[in-house]
Image 1: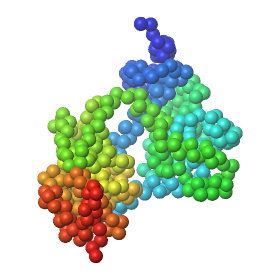
Image 2: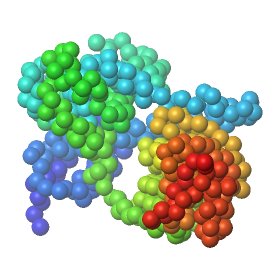
Image 3: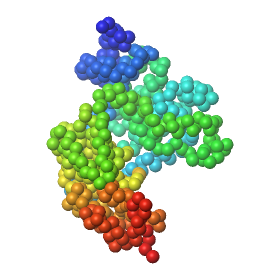
Image 4: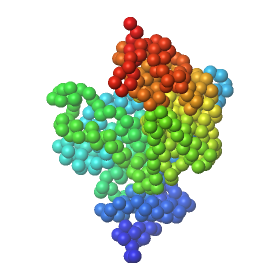
Length: 167
Length: 323
């Protein structure tokens, strides 16, 4: 069977994808990862892709974000175990009070959304949760693309910073 | 804008605006991957700054997706809401649906098409009990009218959709066992523990080993004889009798300040009878142990045990205030 569109593009751009993965911090794993990437992408193709190369780059980018996140998560878990263990041993009294309301983090996010205002919230949700391109959001709302751009940037900064500060 | 941050990369620096701008850019259909590659290659610290920004933004999107669309003011006064040049009512309503679907950019994207998942559901009828063998020495016992979602391809992951389940997990240091209950996450290390969904609350009780509740947030550790009630954003720790954990398998139901509505829901599940509460007693608290065997023969015993009067209704029993 001749290579399908996506496969042809993959083969033609394999070196560039390796270079990209390396620039994304994959180092020596880049060769393995590009192979991994292809297995994932090819196994999951539902239909034709508008821009195959962009699709592959985006997949590679997300792969690296995923790796970063699972590394971070493992570190945090490790740390959390250490801390609670040490805490229990030292005080004898579990950290009950401290933890009763830790999940009120949600309330902080909610407050931030309120501070940002409904339009920025709407744009953030549309872009970062629903995955809608900025141009279409601008059309939906009947506002300029530059307004969407600056609103989205402001919302992303505020919310990403908040999440970063919380942890 | 962020050139000076390179030398403090090891410390807890804030989110880098430049990297965050790239993250936002690269989600767009016309993203310029060559320009992005050039930006990355110009400075080896940028990849990590980008990851950090992307990850924080993903966390933020997940947190926002869990919240209802604000503000309530819009729904009540569609004409006066939105101080700054605002969306119209119809788009707002459409978003309510869209946000629930929550196809989180990036976050879920890869997960979906790595997609080597093969999920299946195990459910029980009211009054039934069933044991699911997970193959690695771990097992789950399901109480009546309960449901868990499992995955053939990910045997150390389970989601409790409703009801109650007792987990007996084989310890594997490299592969923690992850359980999801609504939006609450649990991780354990070789454990016997029980997960119960009661109304909108979730109770997790540990008999052996240890469970980490909300490992990426509260990171609350439960040891044997400890339980936690998760109610929305609040986790409340409780002490329990470790031998009571999973006692429902032998027909013993232990409650610690559960509301009568919750007790009735639980009993309905275990007894396969419809037991309801009158509104005036639904919120009353109960602490103690009920024996399923005797209640099955005579549900009116609940009257004495719970301090209510028990009335036979068409399809079941109603718990009402005593007169």
